[in-house]
Amino acid sequence: MAQLVLLSSEIQPYTLKDDGTFPNNEHLPVLFYEDCLQVPDNFSAAPGIEALFISNKWGGAWENGIYDFPHYHSTSHEVMGVAEGHANVQLGGPHGVVLQMKKGDVLIIPAGVAHCRLDSSTDFSCVGAYPPGQEQYDIMRGDPAERPDADARIQQLSLPSIDPVYGADGPLLSYWVEWRKQSLS
Image 1: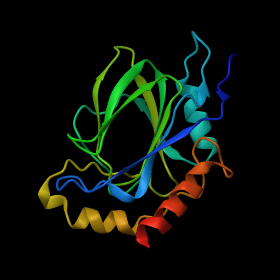
Image 2 (image 1 turned 120 degrees about the horizontal axis):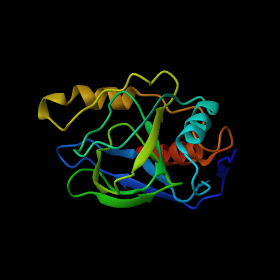
Image 3 (image 1 turned 60 degrees about the vertical axis):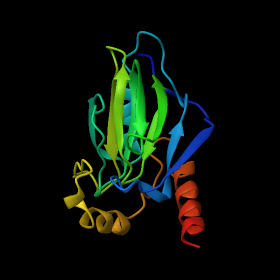
Image 4 (image 1 turned 135 degrees about the vertical axis):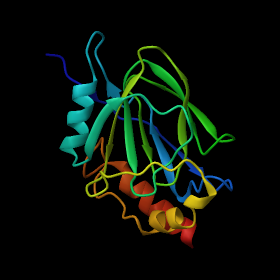
């Protein structure tokens, strides 16, 4: 049976500030691991991506698409790995950055960052998961009544203890710890 192969990836960080509707997260960047998973052709990548996330202690895994409306989570960080197809995903709300994601890409989204699928191929599918203790995620849609409670939950949320792709030595923690230090100083 074919397997996923982990590749080194140039990490693309995106810091997204509060836009008045969505809190986003100026203290933690979204991390885009482009082409970090080599997926053989004619191989269903979803089981391998799910197993990878679970092996790195990220749980609550699901396989599906990405909602086509802007939303964020105030109770969890999230990882998504593209198992099939491609999609344009917008981060940060209606005026945010758009990423072209394809099979083998992974996106780590800190709590508070709005995200939605703008369009996709008909076969688009991804696998998502959450850090330990954060599997019971909420779905916030940018309603003014969500804040300031959602903001407080985001500020209190702990950092993951392990990178969902590269494990204990992965770059997630160094990026997020360093970014948080710089943004708070």
